[in-house]
Length: 165
Image (tube, rainbow, N blue to C red; front, side, top):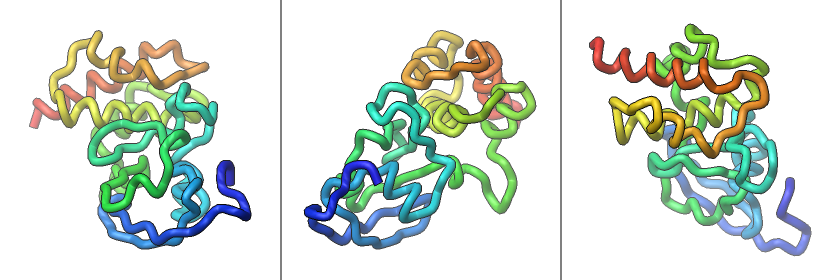
């Protein structure tokens, strides 16, 4: 764990994680990324920069894209946290996950969960984003492999799928 130490006091944390309420004891200084990976065992949340700059750890907190590496778990009391694992339904990929796969929006895959969560937040608040709105929404997420073109195309495809229904 990154921020918690032996002198940290524990507290009971109750939150809704990927649609299910849970309670766990967490240290006051425990970061959300560590709680998700170490306690909840949701390893789709990646640790990149440890400073809120790369977006690999992006999750949704009450529907808003937030870097979990600079968020204290204790600050999530009573809130709804969503991770990449929560987007699939009964083993079926979400429209956004499918679009990333079909449009080759991943290469190494390390940034992909954070990218998808940032894009999910965007599409929920703006189902018909422009190319520049997509780029702005993903500006906090870094990718060292793709050059972003296929990632943006994947988000555009997912937005188009919303309207094809």
